[in-house]
Image 1 (cartoon, each protein chain N blue to C red):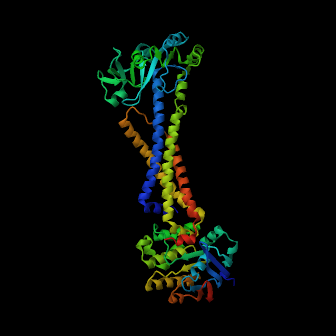
Image 2 (cartoon, each protein chain N blue to C red):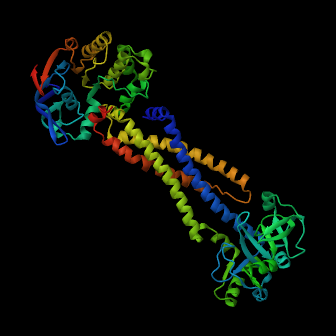
Image 3 (cartoon, each protein chain N blue to C red):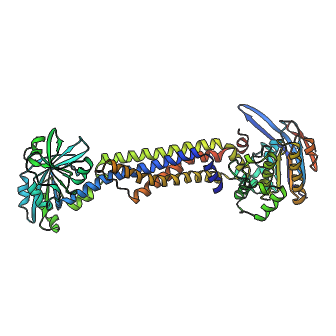
Length: 365
Length: 223
């Protein structure tokens, strides 16, 4: 049977190539879409972790995904947070999403307090803000956008001087003075978040409890909890997007394999009649067709795995600020989806072939 | 001795739309084991239908058929498929080889379907007798009509079936190749006591058989 399957696959190279390509696209699409979204979240969480805070304080109703809600709260709250036992430093930050020139969350920071919490930036070039319209960018942003110190960047319809390029991993890729951002977005004396550093990370839960008593309904999280929450499950729209994209990918694989096997069965009606005249059972016919679909699928899965790594290479070359997290777990899930889609796609034609009347099939021209 | 094939009042009616077309109108037939029987008759007289029923490809509408002790009236589609796999070898006018497989693979696929595994000794004996040892690596399109039919015969007998049913095996062949194929069927019949039922229009082909049955209008009229 295996020789027959290989011969059939080799007999129609274009059909085989299209089927394999469809499965490869399915697998690569699932892996890259999930890799892009989870990569974005993981990388974002890692950067927040890199700030060095132990507790995050956000206003009620704000999102875990910084930049989606600027949701300002009075900046004076920071003074009260600083009085809580075991709090070493508090740094306010104001978030603003910028869409021109790529999607970026810009942090408005108070340099002094941000340094106390984060331990300070590692400067690759330049130095701290010296004026209200100074901007600091991280090295990845600078490399991707060919930004150099002292050049100007256009943000919120204003020209900013690049005062420094810093090591990435401190929350955002772009930082401006908090007061400037407050003025630009009309959020005077407001902050989107307070990064709280404890005298010891072990006090994080105590600090969280104390902040809860002080600020009812505020979103207060120890950092480890934040990292756990940074998944697509906590962003329903993103989850729906991922599900929709996976659905489209699986539908592509399913439909191409279905059409491929359906036309194959039609084309091979007489051959199926010959097999039946030799005594091939329904199970034999179904197994032959499903095995052929599985072979196409397995080659497609291998191609899809390779394709996803190629896609990641291209994406990272074109968009260095993105992260594509290709994981073994999702490689296996994508393979499982492709196999299931292909076998289900091939099952209907296989059942049709098994039900063919041998006399009619032998007479088929 | 119990006949290997016995049919009594065998009828087959095909339905074409709302019209019923009788193909067999009550066939009585007995074939002994080891016999080489030719079935002759004009086109549309029901020869091929009779062959399909005896080979278990299609059930009769009514009547009694017993082949090698298997009563078809008690068998469903799966039973007839199993019966065909182990007891019947078909040879067709149009050879019906699988076009993507080599001659070797076309013969071996019958053994694969039967599930008893590859028997190299029988394979060697059959291909040597049929003179196709040097053609085994070729696909059907690279074989002449006579060579294709010899491969088809090898495929039909490779699993040592009780009965070979040949439907106009020389219908697409020239005189020389026809004679060669008939000689081989005769040789199979003599060497292995292979029961053969062969449909033919050709009186010269029928002359090779032990006995000739004539059909007309869905009935056996002679033999």
